[in-house]
Length: 256
Length: 269
Image 1 (tube, rainbow over the protein chains, first blue to last red):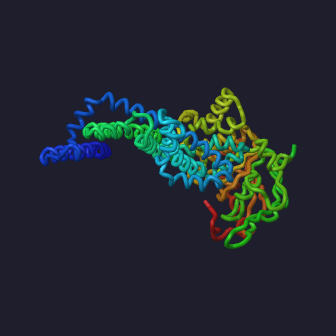
Image 2 (cartoon, chains in turn yellow, orange; image 1 turned 90 degrees about the horizontal axis):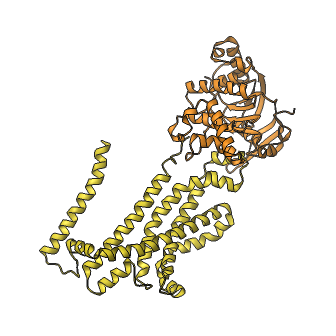
Image 3 (spheres, rainbow over the protein chains, first blue to last red; image 1 turned 180 degrees about the horizontal axis):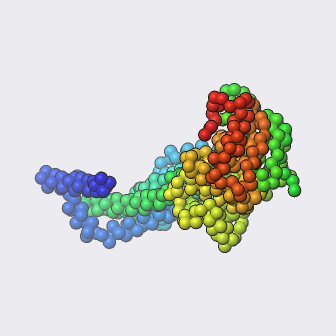
């Protein structure tokens, strides 16, 4: 029973994907759709194979920026959440700022950051990714840190644990599942932000830049090949953080 | 040697939003000698858990004093003079059984090798040596509670505070755990304050039973029930006339009259 449902959950989307691709190909060929409107899957695949080195280089640049941003943003978000959880005034003071940061379209800052750090380095893009990552990691971690069960709080008091000991022994591990949920959400944001930031300037590399320049040279199938690379990059980030989340929550189902 | 616990003139008021202040405890006097097993029994809402929390310094009395081994409750908590177990095992789900037992030792700076030695001893004591590397969610409720008791014993406390530790267990597991607790107490010689709402449990385990009444929480009477030294207490004791007589005596004290109809909120098994 369980096995058949699992097979179904794996096979069904694959079948659907193949059907959609086949329909797409058929439409483009049958109705003679112009490549600038929509290139066929086969031509995108062909370009992806031919320009694989360029796509791979783009993945490395954009993925590298997203990863650095993810690490910086996550570390900052976790530290800020720990401080906010320990020192209540910090939480109260920072709440409006975080609320404001959550609604800022962070990629909109990229032209400013390119001017600030120079447009020949990746720093601006990495910071954009870090800023986008900070908010969900901070909010989720803080929520997790507030979830301490009363029996654990009593236990820590009974052990005369210092605030830092209680944080390390109970609060932080208890917050881990929440932290990793934040990280999973943030991983997609990191890739998207790092990539979109490339549209606004900076060094002439990365997937975002490659998409715009391929489109500018009317090489639409190639542009789509870079989009395919972006999808793969986003999926890799998502799947890795999802696996980390699964690993972190495997024993967190709370016993009595 | 000073008393393990001395509670004198203690009252505790709780401020509630709907009913104003509620007197949870009033005029409590209780002394527990070193090595003595005292149960607190009474219907729900009589303040027995509150009294235990005051002794543990998890809450502070509104008036009166609580001293543990001649120190203030606060100092005793800081000096780790007691071990504590709650109705919920309260294990950390991300730590193994061994890791949970080690926790208090780790927090108080006991070195790795000493910690592992002590953990092995304790798991042996509660019969869970084969489970050191399991996680709490892989254990039954009774096993989790045994881990919690091992953890409470980790630093060989002279005083053990237990708040209905077997309350969530089925009757058979519960009696087995009671037998184990008796032998653990005989081995460690610790004084115990044990909150329960089961009369047979209180009678089987205790040297004395403090019977409490609700609203405001008071100690109605303290009955000596000591049925033989800890070493002699076993399964057969539950079948003896003395045992039944003591159960009746506690039940009558709870009702404030000879036993008749069951008292609400009370476990008369």
